[in-house]
Image (cartoon, rainbow over all chains, first blue to last red; front, top):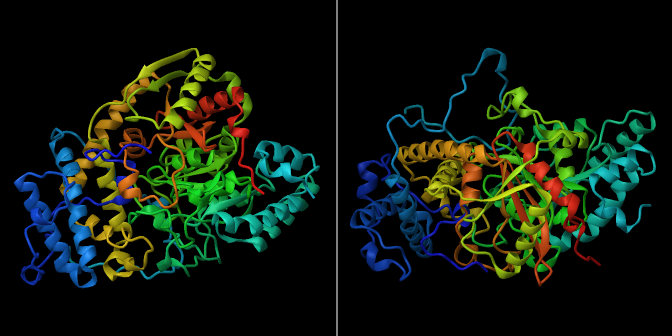
Length: 139
Length: 469
């Protein structure tokens, strides 16, 4: 087997899909107030091989873990909550690397809008079986 | 009825026999169906067999061919489609329990294309749940259970096109359709010892296919040879107004005939020296031999290096954000808990938390690496390296902790939408297949096919298959 590289990201990272970044801006203050308090500080709960994070990184991870628990905590077991916290921690270094990579204002994102031309308009896929998620009207 | 040897013949050979009417599509289909019914469960290779569809299509093909209407090299050829491609009227499970009873009333564009050339669908291939879109820790992350490798049933096929790899390797169909967002064609092809083509992003329509990360999802063939892949790719490629990610008509379409190779340019090969941190010894030896062979086959083979940068980080963020959007209702409804894998049950919650700013930074980084790779392809036509640094892994392995290695080429290739092909290049001492990977500039799918074809014209590894009793 390939030797595990603690600091490297991998193809399995895709499967793991663990990283996350932003504080859940969509959470209401009420939700945040009702968030489940963490049993102890993040640092004390990390496994010994967890990546070392800056204080800012730790705060960021913690706030995100809190946001998830505020929204979904009632669905999660203690083991899952711990796993989420671990995943959040492991995801921080890739985010830090990505943010540290210098991009200029003029660097365009590799994202494009292809205008929907009249001649290309097609009806939506017929009768998708699963009910689509409700989309909030406000943005 | 056809004999045992038929199961491992390439599409090109089966097509010759069908066209000359020495092989009956109905008999061929029935033979593959019988074998798949018997052996499919051993490998968990199929989500389901579709004998009614198969026999109806085979009978129609036979009738047409008898009348002199031969549609081309896939006419009457049995295949399997990964179970994330919609087929009208039968379940399309996406390999996941929450979608176990999902039935579409239309066919995916890829299925329509294969129908139009007269191919015969014998079943839906098993797969990792949601193609790994919510993460997974174990090979068992599938509605169908773990897919076992025909070369060694204690080993995995890799994912997420797990069943597609097993089906081709075990001779249960002549070819299979897989999909790749990141590694899901290349890795199963390598682990299963088959030839797999990941086309340039946008050449094959995803309409009717499960969306995972729409800016990275691709569909491609897995078969017995590079030439087979080329012929299948020619049938499924093309612009589709129903998939707005497809390239324009003149860029998406692909035509292939062996005579094209006579006019092909001499390829400049770049042998990547930094694609993998290290290769498992059992893999290193065949790959070293493959390099020797390549140096004999191509006049220009020089060392090449991938640019350094956070390309995998960018790719992971793009996949996480887009998959969280694709499966938003599953995550928010809590039905994600019905997934098999413990990681799949929770990772979506985490993926939802990415910021738009970080996603856009990833897209900016994507633009930068696209330009860097385009510059590298000014020097080389094709880059080559091992398809994977390891051979097939044990079924029980924890993929999260025990199979972690950097994969910059996988990251770059998939965020840039580059075409790639994995072909068998040897066996380990444990008789497990080893794959060789070719990657080319976006749009130059022919270059990877040409490189792989050249390699296979001088080697026999693609003709090897597991002994199955």
